[in-house]
Length: 260
Image (cartoon, rainbow, N blue to C red; front, top):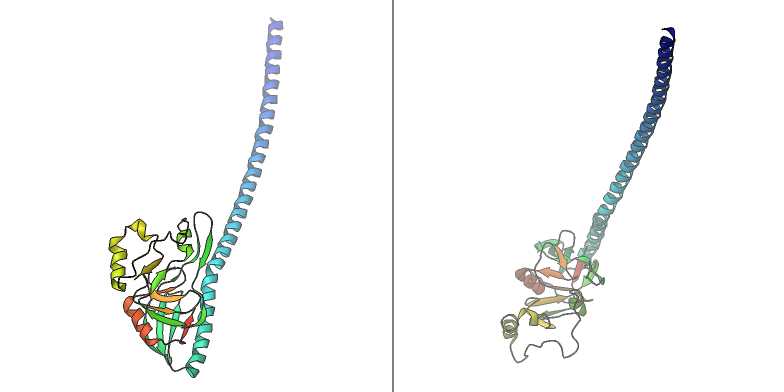
């Protein structure tokens, strides 16, 4: 009877020892896993802080970048005000101020406001699908009226087609409007006798610029156009018909135009 009891006690003792050893090892493993989890948590917190810091820095740079055009516009505005003050002392005629930030014009004489309204100005950097890039910004600074004209044609430059990923027409490939027609008849012919696809290939377009143009040199014109109040043009200043005529009548050749 004693031998079975001794064997049973020995088996139980061994089983208990194995169980204790297993529990001890499991406790060590749990402890290591707890340490690893704690380390991972610290790493996640560190990465999160780095990400937040980078986000703050990025926001700061973005805010700084966004503020640059506004800062430049403010500086240009101050310079134009100084130029205007100097102009008023020495020039008694009509002159024009163009605000490309607010897209407004101010016709003045002797510092007094005569007429004000909305205009459209250059849309800035533009690219086509082929990767060609243009800067269609309205140039800033003081310019002068070079010449004026009535019933102007818009002579499409090559970028008109390139911007649409089209090849500019070679000589003889563009569509001509009969010059035997009057200017008014040419406008009707262009709009009513040609299809939309044919109108694309007309290089000399009647009526597109309105009834008047004021040339500031360098391809920059004051002319009729849509999109007033926005930056939409290819560098020219777009005006409504009545505003354009008033400015055309008021500004002589040589009159200053201050753009900022």
